[in-house]
Amino acid sequence: MSLADLIKPHIRSLAPYQPGKPMEELEREMGIRSSIKLASNENPLGPSPLAVEAMRNAASEIHRYPDGASFALRAKLSKRLGVAGNQLVFGCGGDEILELIAKTLIGPGDEVVYGWPSFAMYPIVVQGFGANSVQVPLTDGFEHDLDAMLAAITDRTRVVMVCNPNNPTGMSFGASEFELFAAALPDDVVLVVDEAYFEFVRRPDFPDVLSLIAKRPGTLVLRTFSKIYGLAGMRIGYGICDAELASYLERARHPFNVNRMAEVAALAALDDAEHVARTLEVNAAGVEYLTVELGRLGVKTWPTDTNYILAHTGSGIFEELLETGVIVRPMTGFGLTEYVRISIGLPEENERLIKTLSIILESRGADS
Image (cartoon, rainbow, N blue to C red; front, top):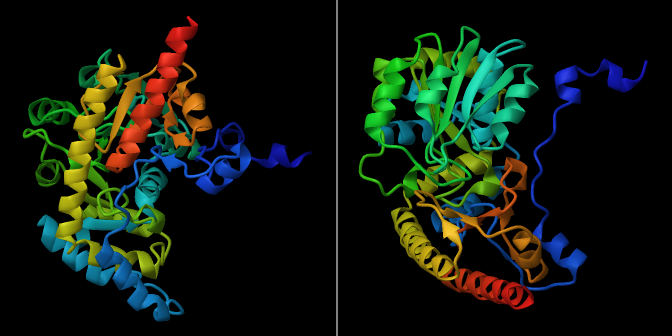
């Protein structure tokens, strides 16, 4: 018997998440310098300065274990959100909250319904616990088909996940359609609403999912410090849900799952209103600039409530941009072979992307 024979079949067949290579390694491999990364939806302004200062001050304490209950962060965040402290669950990024949900709620034979394309970790987490993904195609306009998602629910469905705004498409849905969707869900199905990008949302009718938790206890909202606060490298996210559901997730959580520096950084970042405001300003300007300029180049884009844009560039564009040191995210893994996802960068980075893409498309036109 080989080692592979000992591995659970659903793990043996699981395709792992494929992160992008570090910029330094790409530059070494391709012989380029001064590359720009517009692939991972990171904050182009960097981390919250208050968070950096707080981590610097706390560095001498890293021989101590973290606060396993995230006491100070829990108190500040619960006050900010207007929820009880025991309604919060913290994790090593939002990914760990997804794993806690899966660990607590699903197993072999169970089903999890979600729209597709969406966050790449959904199928990985679901299959990792032996359950089955029920992927409901987005509409032709890359919006969630909430009616089709309801129709996909069976007596084996344990969890329904919606990413709003959706990654990688950037599209969001409004309060009225969400309320109808949530009201139609069976009570024995847990609703997970992934709001990793909610701080960037500009639509006025964005759903207030937190208010739903009191009416529908089987609801969880997932958020992160990675995007607006620029703490992606610290890996800290959180879930907001009914206290009973939170208590079960806490039982599944490893002690000290959030490291000390991440807690300190998140606590300080919550006070950094200036950094948040500047991030939103840069992002809004970048979205407008890229939307206009990509349109001028004949590249179709979709409205976005996030810090990235989905663009139909044609096939091979990712590779050609990469050769010049401009890194975007190919959508091949989602079945969108002619699309890329472009993170909003600093003005000079956005301008470089457009200039480079313009040259590529012009060259293609000359060759045809």
